[in-house]
Image (cartoon, rainbow, N blue to C red; front, side, top):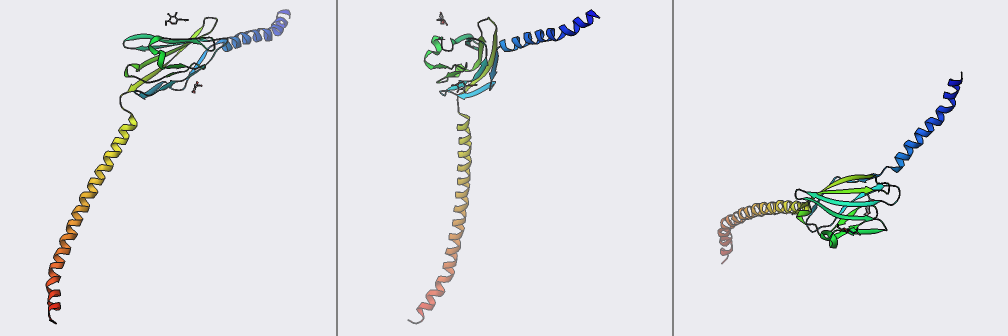
Length: 192
Ligand SMILES: *[C@@H]1O[C@H](CO)[C@@H](O)[C@H](O)[C@H]1NC(C)=O
Ligand SMILES: *[C@@H]1O[C@H](CO)[C@@H](O)[C@H](O)[C@H]1NC(C)=O
């Protein structure tokens, strides 16, 4: 009888304890959300590499760049505490409190993988990666160019057809005038 009663009264407490430990783990965990996994931007434009995160306490946000040539630190900062931007990015990087960065005046070598690491005071951390591709030509420009070429082609075709038609009309009118004129002259000449 006793063991069963013990089990009955202790089970909810035990369950609660397990649940609260689980909840603690959940709230302590760092989450990083990214809106896009890859970005395509033309040279000289700016890009917002956007992330959001949840974390307890003051987070440390760290960005690094990885390409075939290796790894390079971009910036390390604690929102409202300090910000350390590496020399290479100094004049064209902006850090945001939500963990995002804005990189200005894009260059072709900026193509690569951007890794963000968010860590909290307990030492746990999480990473997220975003791929950036910097292109030489605006895709929109290419689209404009193809539309422009199509319009030009259509105009050339229209002009050729118009000229052909005009030529035909001209020949017809000329032929008609040539057949009409002598008669006309004759009728006018008669009274004289
Ligand atoms: C982060 O902050 C920047 C600048 O304030 C904003 O443009 C961007 O949308 C934000 N991103 C997210 C995921 O909240
Ligand atoms: C900032 O970063 C550089 C190298 O990236 C490092 O040498 C320097 O100690 C850092 N400064 C601070 C205040 O974290």
